[in-house]
Image (cartoon, rainbow over all chains, first blue to last red):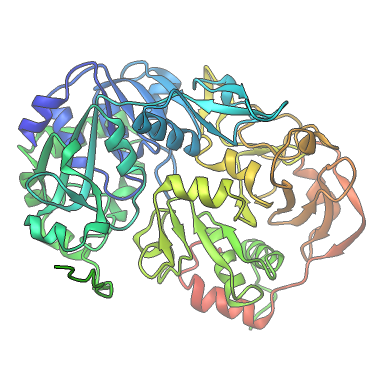
Length: 299
Length: 256
């Protein structure tokens, strides 16, 4: 992880650590904080706790997003402080709706000049901070539709269950926008719970979301998405999401938390050791395997 | 089963569930709306498919989901897909029959604010923003709004219009060319309101037991219209109470 962040994430870059509630790579976010990056443009549909922590640590000057909340809990207080009071530094925002962000990643991945969507008519969102425009249909008179511009992050960081050494990546559960953001980004870092043989990937090709072709670095980082979750591997640590609601209301407590859990640990392995086996055991789900499928042999 | 201890939240859950009679697909949020949808699935809408914006179709949660991205929504769902498919093929494709929405502010035409209190550029309170709400409000065939009544929420003028309802009322929504019909019901802890008049203006249709018209007006920031006939909301049945209290939310996280 250290080398991947050092090599691919630079001051001033636009960075998308995606994953909708699931597969959020906290390990990468914490490493970016430790390496002291500045002036990043952070991109995520739902900034979640990871961007709350990164913005509190001062790594970002801009945020591109569509829903600003602690999912199922409440507010993201650090980001609110940055927007409402400019603490620890002013934060420029660029805001869309979910489908607007979906369209931006899709246009970015498809190398299209814009993405049309049936949204925004009558809403104040287009006049706020996002670059939403309107086009007339070339096929039907008087049909106007909203469009959003392509989004091509400098770096995408995607967490998943497994990949092979070449970066062929398989993911099951909430697919979010992991595929589109990877195809849209200039550089792609894949972070996985397990590195597997190429034969494992080839045994189930329909599950491969991201081909190694577009992947620049593969990082093996078990529990790299804690306190978010990885389907079938560990549950969301909801106790932490609830406690962050309290910690994040107070700037001093946030500083102390960052000192203890980010600056105070060398890497994710040290973080996990500090977290303790009991917590990891608590987050372990029971089994619910899929029925096997047979692709057939056609030799 | 005790009926005299029914909570306002339970009245909201039951009212929302009953309104979903016969519905096939619903776009769900967490918390109270989630329980309402599951109650409907157990009672008046057995073939109801729960759709979550996280990319889940046909969820059958084994525990109370803690967020719309909870892993319990994935396990044993009918389908889990990229969000591009959920918003494109399902929502914009017109397959969502009912969507449940809420907000920090609502006006008399059912327009919703979930973005800011105060000025956008220098907000007093920065709220979460749209998420999928703006396109849900435009594309879902029907919209039910679930909100607690309060003067801070039911305002004569929104600070920011995030998700369009009936816009300025009358034919405004139709003229805007939205695929969906817009807000149909507002289900609150004290009363039920609808938009069943030519102006598409919110009107009182049903008071929960023991609530007076004055108590409702007190929490609304404009002169609230009344339907020609205002009735009393029926109490939950024994079976509805049992499902809510023993099956769907035994800990009472969202019922109290």
